[in-house]
Length: 440
Ligand code: GUN
Ligand code: ZN
Image (cartoon, rainbow, N blue to C red):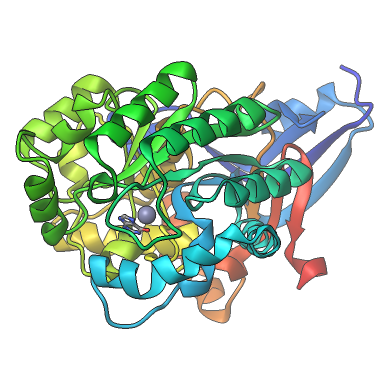
């Protein structure tokens, strides 16, 4: 094999070959203590034990990370880039938090310059945290969408986003109409969908801020771009459920509001989905629609305890990914997000296995974004999105990881004690997006 322009990273390589919620976690993971990932032109060419792989690549440039872990880049399947500045806003539950902090901040995104500045800062944060793909909310303003797509295209990062659709229950300046939301969404999808690594995500915010007619318009946009994604919020807080029942008296339940508009199908990404009925859970599974679990947000806003076990059993395999949900969420770190997922599962009587947690943060989120053929695992033919994590990043981590006897236990220590400090390198489509030791 020609080694021209191929490069390799060598270290402890971890990836996924199966679903750890279906087979045993250790059978779902592949681990090479001295592994290597070979990349060329942004694509993974080979993965495996260094001694097996490297002889086929004579003269290849290899960068070695002795104690570090090389993993698939994280995928954050639910995050709001315009909320970067309102992260950690005190003392409110969902509706109050939206009205007091979020909506006033989102109003600023009619200014393209402001939107570009925050989009760049947002993408810097993703890179510093090892997140190489994300499904992102913008605001109602088309400028906010273009700003993020432009910035993501320049960096070559895999991003799905789209214009928020909101035609009621929001301040003037943050609302659109059925027609304008349709027209603007179509124009943005035409411009950006499928361009390089960019995907359009049809984005009605949630049922309380959209009329039934606007949700239907969202369905029509999706019909026009069937391989685009759809993102919205659902069943996050109990007050919200009451509001939805009042606004849509004929709907069987919350999911039915979206189903009536044709929004429940593969590629749909429902954020939160905490307070589901059995019927909703079954309908999600039957439709192949996905769910974003956003644990730091659910704790911060006091939303409730997500029922992971109810959605991800060996028979009920609803696609579930992990979202930071900044700024309702309190960290851009997918490690910190896994930590809170673990704690929520504990409160539900289940100990989330570290391999399951890392799977949710990589393949799980990629599945919600219908991108497992492109990202989420390290396999020949996949895009070369990967991260290098340093188990000695802090004194406590070094102490704790030094005592770990299995790779699962190292992963567990990383998810409980780790955050952005652990990320040594972030590689997107073969290019270094972030290098801790030169950038810091
Ligand atoms: N529900 C509707 N909009 C939002 C939002 O911006 N954040 C969260 N956490 N929930 C929502
Ligand atoms: Zn959200």
